[in-house]
Length: 277
Ligand SMILES: O=C(O)CCC(=O)C(=O)O
Image (cartoon, rainbow, N blue to C red; front, top):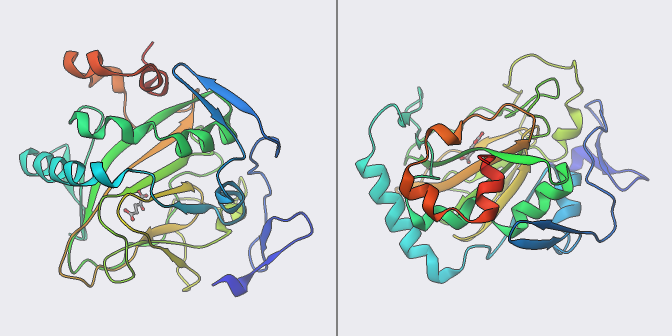
């Protein structure tokens, strides 16, 4: 809970119980403009989300996906899941969630979702212009699923650090339907040689990232997280992905997966983040 953390003189939330590595920083602090091939992004303009991301390791940004697009995205999500087969479609060992890989190639409805301005702004802030998309997939947390174990997506000794991830809420994320849970400030605890493996202890010090459909969670992959139990009767659908440093190892080699049709509709920003040129 928040009680475990305090705001230090630097303004950065530090854990009282966990060692602070202090290595995660966002660039500069002042307003800067970066240019991607087809858009100009100004840093420091996201209403406190930037400070929240740095301090807590995650933030929830509402209304990122226009309400007018949500129904067609949800329908396309159901369609591609229904048509998919293994190995792209994968049910977790626990049986609690189903994941479908590579939403870059699955439909025009998903094209904007891996080049969202607030997420790209956070990437520019964290990496400068030298980053690329590592993964982009759908995940459904099934009704009755138990909470996922807390984990990190990356450790500081990996070349994908500091991975920056995002989750687009296709459904509302609520406390009863499997909203993602995070341990605020835990990204500061990931010292280089601190731990092996990606599982992290669960002592109840988490908060839920809730929001209406169309909201986007942005988080550092070193923040301890996992989905919570889905006690509702409905599925919790999300489209999620991660960015890593340009020289780091990506989970998906996009060049080998792109169809001629998908290649033909890629925007300049999409080509840049897919690192295919
Ligand atoms: O789907 C979620 O809520 C969490 C996903 C997650 O833990 C992950 O992608 O590493």
